[in-house]
Length: 459
Image (cartoon, rainbow, N blue to C red; front, side):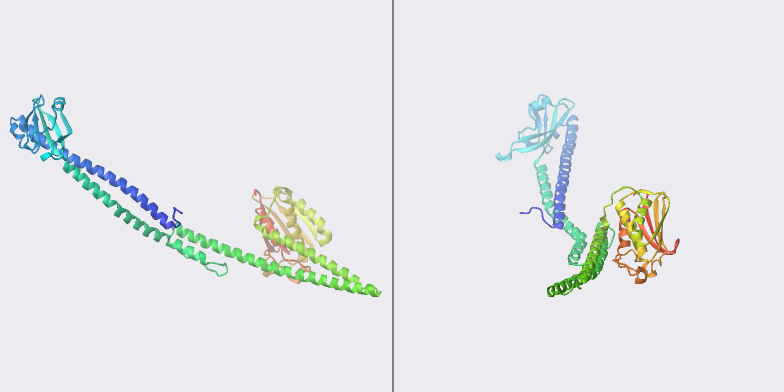
């Protein structure tokens, strides 16, 4: 059995009710104590006033005023009563021992025999020793005081449940009003089943915690929608890029199988093997498409992990890395690379930086450039590495999207080379993993495409 309710509203109201009950009990207990003391003080003040009046009269030589008091008794120094109110009917407010022991004044309690054999009556007594040595005792029945206490206690006890119910109802109304926007947010969030419908979280007015939560959730939903759109575009582009090499690979394999079957038929018939050359070409074409698919899969995996690319920090000589890759790729790309500028050693992942250099060189060569100038500038806050070629540059319509995935130039710029349009996006992802930025433009120093990489001095 679940003891704690599931509803936050019920839990808050229960906590409020329990807290209000405890607070009310403490406050009413304190009120009862204060009022009880005030009642007792009022009784004692009445006793003091009466005792003062009677004592003044007795001291003035009029002891017969004692019987006129509602409840008074006068004792000699030995403790024997010499005058008393008729209501006492032979009873004693003080015992002889207490009379003899009294020094100045004392509030005490006494018990008088009940009337007509009834229960004894409790009396509150003020005893005062007079100047001549006698003792005057003035009393008042305690029953009215006790009745007043009982009525006060009953009133306070009866007031607790309605007050607790009133506080609980107020708490329920306040909590319900405060959590109404949360219910609206919950219903809307449950109704949003896809990021494609463009639904937003309901607006909550104000600047309190719930309003800020609503704005935060709405902003998060917008960011998720943008990320979803990017990933969907990525999947669509990847599917489109994979469709062509897979179709070519399938066609080459079917052609090879057909040529091989014809070759076997010709062999059985004793004819020359003219189709074996076609089998060899088809298999080589299939191997090339397989290698292209492998590179494309690796690049797609790298871009998919762009937010968490591993980058091992180790000292890397940037100009040396560029020169090594340029020497390696020169026979393949036919691209002359000139590296100038400052010596620069940065903490980075050497393999990733090599990948950046290779992609940028291949991109320049694919665009028709013959010379690539790489300038290195070591700064105080940022290191700048600029790749500039003498090719035709980026088309005006591609400058904004050149670093987007699967963005490629026209056939004139690529000189018939095939590519998936992932070189610049991969380079940007690697640079971002090192805390840097990458921008593209056209113009000086060679008049073609210019790719500028900025790496932080303290990554």
